[in-house]
Length: 298
Image 1 (cartoon, rainbow, N blue to C red):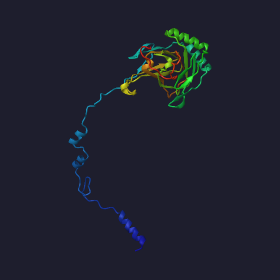
Image 2 (image 1 turned 120 degrees about the vertical axis):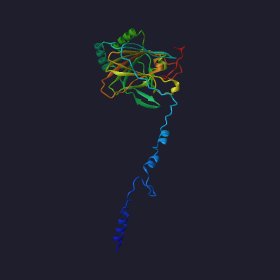
Image 3 (image 1 turned 45 degrees about the vertical axis):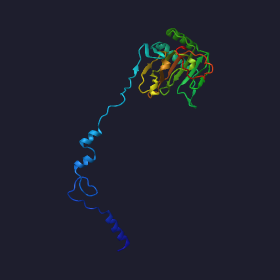
Image 4 (image 1 turned 90 degrees about the vertical axis):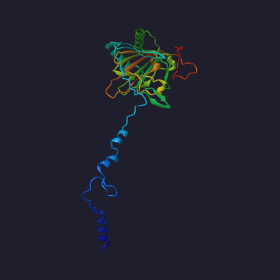
């Protein structure tokens, strides 16, 4: 027999299947003994005794916590949103502070005439461009996010007039103005508090919104035992419409953070004018950093 034919026979014998034993059911172990259904279930731990132990319920050691529902504020009024060691945190909301005609005219004028620019900030030594445009008016410079906006005492007349109207309505006085332009829904500002030392203790911030509606969100600072976890804190959302005035006062900057988040559907441009009072930086203090004030200071 030739080598080729011999190899073919050998390969064919390898490929030949062994006949199956007749009358055999179940799963056969190595000794070819069938396994009964009851034995198979027992080996898979589906027996009553073992199942009860496997699914035994234990009461959780920690209490179950629920995330508090977000509160919505959209009607005119004064809202005391929290009470704490730092004092009362308060919002005052006034939709329609400017009439539609006034707001339309002011929006168009400020959009075209203010010196808008994109500010470069720094975080952990890395530079990044703010996702919005800004400009600053005030006798003193303003530093935040390790970047300084130089003083600019040349207020446009329209902003001088608006400042006087805001001061008359709120009963507060302001010497500075930070202007923000959100060009579309992708422009934003992240979670933060306006608590730089140059703003003083318990600063009051007055915000006038012009243009498309954006959601202004707030979240409460977590207590120390939460170790910076914001999961279970109180949250508030305030839709800021064209011509609305919002006032943050009391302990709001101590006890809450706020933001305007990105939105992934069509949004037109929005201008936000935030009036505030700036003081000279404390001696020996690095500009733009926080300083905790005591009750005596406030």
